[in-house]
Length: 258
Image 1 (cartoon, rainbow, N blue to C red):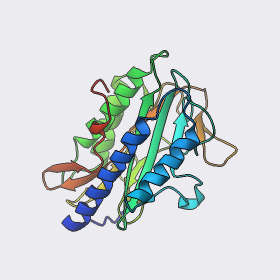
Image 2: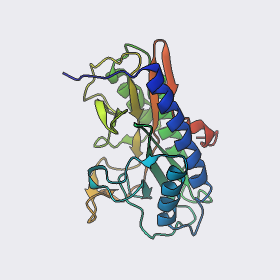
Image 3: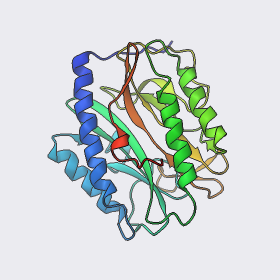
Image 4: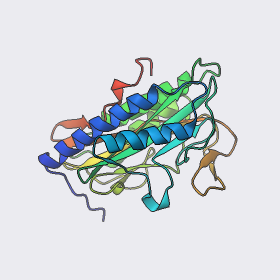
């Protein structure tokens, strides 16, 4: 049986503060997302900015992960440690990061096109972000995980894309990954109902091709089996009695058309 640990209002307030710091760091990273930027510079930027606000990068050292952020480019999906690759015009990149602030984690991710959209990736970004919103709009006290998952998968399919089923959302709080599992399709924990005070990370990961991945030689990076591209948006939310609160408000950095 899946056991959830609701957060107190004071604990959610801490996560709200940490989430605001995370979004502000993302803003600074976003400003560097342009042709010629080295991915390892983004990693250093995240580390330095986290330290500046008295926080720690959630990902660094988590199960041995060697970096502060995941920086997934083009056919990479998730869990990609930044390399010395320099971004190029038309690349698609996902920045995924977490912040450990005052003993609580927040987690978020966004995908962006570098420079001009010469490969027509914008429809994928729109579909993925809309799927995030569709899942989030289901949230209220008593909602089942399966209802969130269904809304996400329906939205992705309506746009003609495919959920990457191997990667899922999760509960979050004192640990980076807590119960429940929050899939982007109806599956794990589908009958689990969320109480007020629950905090979860919803994160649709969506591809243009086959649903499958290959693990890279670094033991972390995942790429699509057919070299197609993928996008990923994620935010941390708190469940309220009559709805939800987004603790990492990505609308501060997402363009309206997404």
